[in-house]
Amino acid sequence: MVAQARNRISKMDPQRAQLDDQGFTALPGFMSDEMLERMRARVDELFAEEGEQAGSEFRREENARRLANLVDKGEIFREAIASAPILALVEAVLGPEFKLSSLNVRSADPHSNSLQPLHVDMGLLPDQRGYAVCNTVWMLDDFTEANGALRVVPRSHRFGHRPQDVLSDLNAVHPEEILVTGRAGTVVVMNAHLWHGGTANRTDRERRALHGFFCRRDIVQQQYQKKLLRPATQDALSPTLRRLLALDDPLNDQLCASGSGQSGFLK
Ligand SMILES: O=C(O)CCC(=O)C(=O)O
Image 1 (cartoon, rainbow, N blue to C red):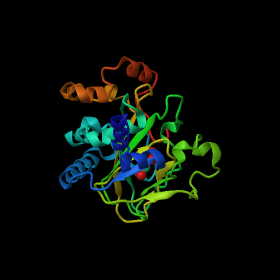
Image 2 (cartoon, helix red, strand yellow; image 1 turned 90 degrees about the horizontal axis):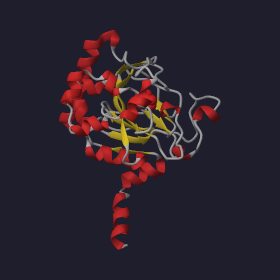
Image 3 (cartoon, helix red, strand yellow; image 1 turned 180 degrees about the horizontal axis):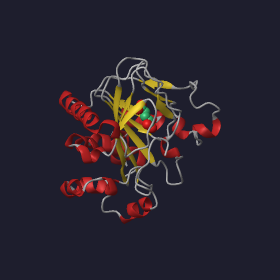
């Protein structure tokens, strides 16, 4: 009994407790300088290489550039999704049976109305099995009050309804919303049933973030990894990553069969 209680308490570290209670937690300095630099360099390279096609695997959004299908596009991204402390927090939300849903970069354009409506990811509410979606936001630039930081409504993952079901203006400032600011290298883990969205970037620099989005194994992937990843990439993956990406998972094939394998923001 004592051992069990001790185990429960050690599992409820401050980050897990905040994630559970508020619906999100931030890990400042999670990325090493080296990791941050490698990720930024690869992101810049991909934007340059892909030009107008950047993010075309995903649904387009005004006032923000995207990169999509990033598991296929660099070792640094595969390292990020395999990060054990982050996966432990994702597991705290979703339970042990989860998979990657999509891996994208979103870059809010300078001097733009990159404000997103308050939303929950994939429009999903928790169901009888519990929470279904969890997002991780890797800050590649500082998130400030001026440059389009993420806004969240703390505790809204427990409201039991979606913003579009109860709010008349999804773009308006919510009375309980807060901005999640932080230094580049911070990773935010967010229960993706939390009401959230990007805000307007009023600065002259872009604001970049990697989004590693996870879902329970019985939920359709936002991007069907097995269809998008090149065979050579798939063949080189470790068994652990193959499982995380649901590459050998008949249920995932079935869930994704009806879709195009391409979806995006709010889908
Ligand atoms: O980039 C952000 O700050 C938030 C993005 C987001 O919530 C989304 O694209 O669904």
